[in-house]
Length: 151
Image 1 (cartoon, one colour):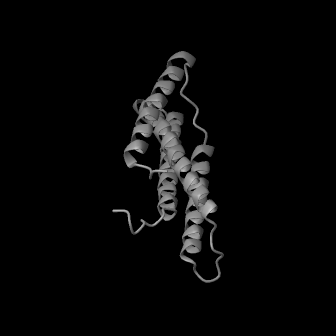
Image 2 (cartoon, rainbow, N blue to C red):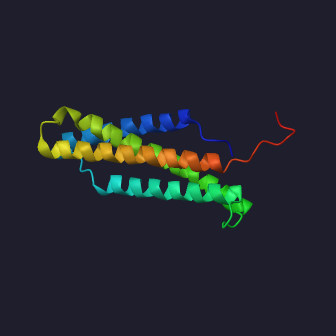
């Protein structure tokens, strides 16, 4: 596995922002209402970010062999790295989509319920950024040290 590149995450977020913007404009044009944005989206993102941060901290302690911790199995570390890669991409997808929703709804800021949806979309974007940061931290912790014979 190769480490996650920030360029990939930004590309995913940009594509999903365009999709989120387009979906929001389509719903507005054809349904005659703005796209509903659930308040659970930012809540789930924050819970996932906290879980990733706790997992990363525990994994770091176990890999370092701190007293009172059980040494981590190599397969568990590899699975943790795979989880981190999946979580970083998930954060990019969710963050990009809700950024597109917020951009599409921004011209209607004066309408109170639309303003609320914009704020919830921005909160989901913030939670998604936290997920990406937690996932990148976990992925970095799970990297193998370079071999002596590798440059």
